[in-house]
Every structure is written in C-alpha cells, then in structure tokens.
Image 1 (cartoon, rainbow, N blue to C red):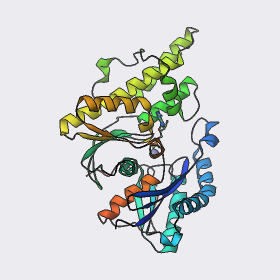
Image 2 (image 1 turned 135 degrees about the vertical axis):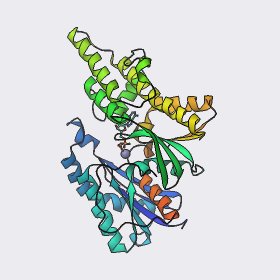
Image 3 (image 1 turned 90 degrees about the vertical axis):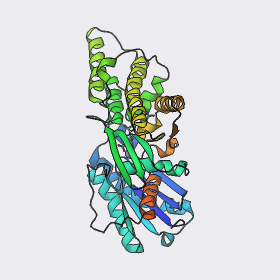
Image 4 (image 1 turned 45 degrees about the vertical axis):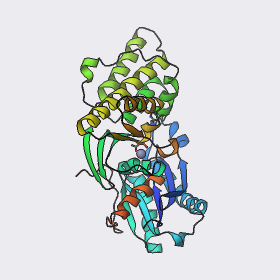
Amino acid sequence: MDEKIILGIETSCDETSAAVMKGELLLSNVISSQIDIHRRFGGVVPEIASRNHLTAVIPVVDEAVNKAGVKLTDIDAIAVTYGAGLVGALLVGLSAAKSLSYALNVPLYAVNHIEAHIAANYISSPELKPPFLAVVASGGHTGIVRVDGYNKFAMLASTTDDAIGEAFDKVARAIGLPYPGGPEIDKRSKLGKADIEFISHKHRGSELSYSGLKTAVVNYLHTLEQRGEKPNVEDVCASFSKTAVDMLVDTAVNEAKRTGIKTLALAGGVAANSYLREKITSECKANNFTVYFPPMSLCTDNAAMICARARGMMQENIPPAGLDLNAVSYLKIQSE
Ligand code: KG4
Ligand code: ZN
C-alpha cells in the first residue's frame, strides 16, 4: 500500500486544486485560486465558482500530474471532495474524478473536506498519529474533534452558530476590508491593541459561539458611526481576533485536560491565523501539550489534504465509492 500513487481533486469552494501523493510523499499540489474573481462581489458567487472550476479543472489536473513526474496511467487511486461545499462547485470535481476513475479503471475515494483539513497534518508531520484532538477552525466548521484513528472521529465541542472563519469574513466586511477577510484582519491585528471588550468574560462561558461576537463588533461600529467617530481599524481587528481565538483555544485546552489527550493539531483555513498559532503554541507549552499545525500552503483549501485523507481510508480498507457518488453540500464529520 505504502507506495500507492493517489491523485486528489478539490473543488468545494473557490480553489481548483489537484495533487499527487506517492506513499507519504507529496509530489505535487497545484492550486488555482478564484479569489481575485470573487473579490469584487465581496464573497464567493456559487455559479461563477462552478464555471471557473469547469475551465480550470483539467489544466490543473494535467499540471499536478506533470509536476509530480508521473503519467496518468501510473495513478493507483483517485480521491475527491464530495462535501461539504457549494454543490455546483463540488459536482465539477466529482465529474472529473469519476471520469478519470472510470477511464483509468482505478478506485474512487469519497473524501469529507473537513476530515481532509485534519489529515493535512499527516503530510507536514508524518510522526503525528491518532489519538489526538483536532482544533477545527475553518470557514464552515468550528469545533474540537477527537481523532481516535485515521477513520474514527468524535465531535467533542462545536460552535452553536457561525463558524470562526465565517465570523472573520463577516466582521471584515463590516469594517470594509476586502474578501477574504480572515487574512486582512490577521494583517491589521498585528498593528493594533486588543483592548476593546466585545463580549464580557461573564458571557463568554465555555460555549463556542461566534454569532454574538460578530453582532457585538457590528453594533460597536454602528455606535461610533452614529456619533460621527471613526473606528481604529487595527484595534478592532486585534480585539476581535483575540476574543474569537481565545474562545477556541480555551475550549481546546479544556477538552485536552478533560480527555487526557495531550496532542493537538490545528485544521482549516483559520489555522493560518498568526495569533491562533501563537496562542495555541504558548498554551500548549504552559500545559505540557504538543501542538501541530500544517504549513500555510496546507491550511486553506488544497488537494494534497484530499490525498492524505484518502490514504488513511486506503490503509484501513475503507471501500471506495461507486460512480453514482453525489455531492453533499452539508456534510458533517462522520462521528462514531
Ligand atoms: O478551511 P477553509 O478553507 O474553509 C472551509 O473549508 O470552510 O478556510 C477559509 C476560511 C475563510 O473564512 C478565511 O477568511 C479564513 O479561512 N482564513 C483566515 C486566515 N486565512 C484564511 N482567518 C484568519 N486568519 C487568517 N490568516
Ligand atoms: Zn476548507
């Protein structure tokens, strides 16, 4: 199994990506981003995303195969994201993956996007083995997942409303920053003071919730506007980031203490956030926990993580999907 060559395809949102892995080695990871196309609309427009995936997917697959130095006929398995994501966007990747699986006569693995974000850690840290706690911080999902095996997950805590990435993007929009808001807030946070209290400690509790925080920031901006005052953007960004991230890190540390699992791994686009990386590193150091996070290139959407997730499925003989595989827009982690 270990030298099997997997071609992964990811088209769940606004990045068209294809990657090739041979065993635990990543041979190529090509990402064609549509961010510039969607920026002027202030967010991803689903129909435009699907159309752009359609024109990009074959050239991106070709480039990934060429960069990997392999031939299509060397591929042993195809892996594709089937959810969660935008249904039209997912269908483009699925159609390409099914065609390749059929034409090359190789198995097709149906990959859950969020589980793949967790598996990104296996590429950069091959020494990481379950059990560990995954701190999932993405655009659509937020929570602490107990990873009991390569294919065994249990959701321990999850947001009761918005995801953390969604909150970053919505707050950025309210401030007037371009899409995607997460990296913009990250940049400005470094220049600001985190001294605005959007949610009192008393209300924060141990629950993960981002909708109230987002509303608190929006209300704060409105109040200033009504007074004819301008916000200090850097301070708003720093204060929001600190509140959002601390809530997640506190929950992760509590779950690590409660379960006795002392290894943590960050997953999802918000894992690229510099304050989150710093904060979780210092908290883990203080508590004698070990923390892993993928390099920036493997934090946001990419197909390398799709290969890594399928590898775990192949290692434990999870059956491949049939050619009737469909896209699932709302897909949760497959908790036991
Ligand atoms: O995990 P992801 O690809 O989305 C889902 O799979 O749902 O991550 C995208 C999210 C966006 O909300 C984006 O703003 C956020 O990750 N993000 C960041 C940073 N880089 C990306 N948020 C905060 N700081 C960053 N540096
Ligand atoms: Zn993602």
